[in-house]
Image (cartoon, rainbow, N blue to C red; front, side):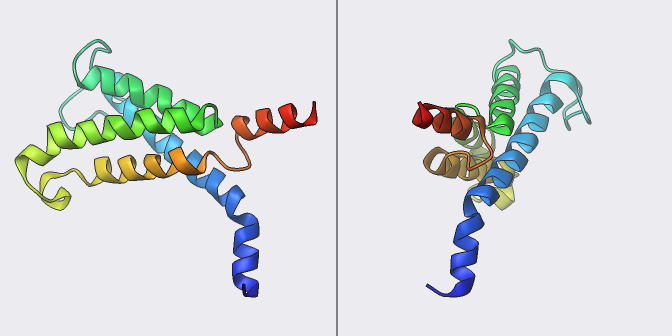
Length: 140
């Protein structure tokens, strides 16, 4: 292993945490846009009721999963649920209109789906409540 790989490997758990935090923030805002029309209203209009199918439920999932990712709590489970929600969104809302994500406006859904899927397998990184809980259990 060369020096660059050694240095990069040493900081990868921290960078994974940065990735998780940014993804969590973006996913949270994706949900608040649907539920509260904040920070900007969605293209279709204003606030969506939480109980409406599928957008209100999607907004609720995005808000809860996003906050859990931001703090790094039950990261793998939250990411699994979010990834599934994005796969569902892609195949029900985008893919029927055209084959390629670039054609059907589904790029964000695909990117969220696979970014979240990555977090299912990698976890939340060094700076996550999950990591703090594991350290506490190991010291007992």
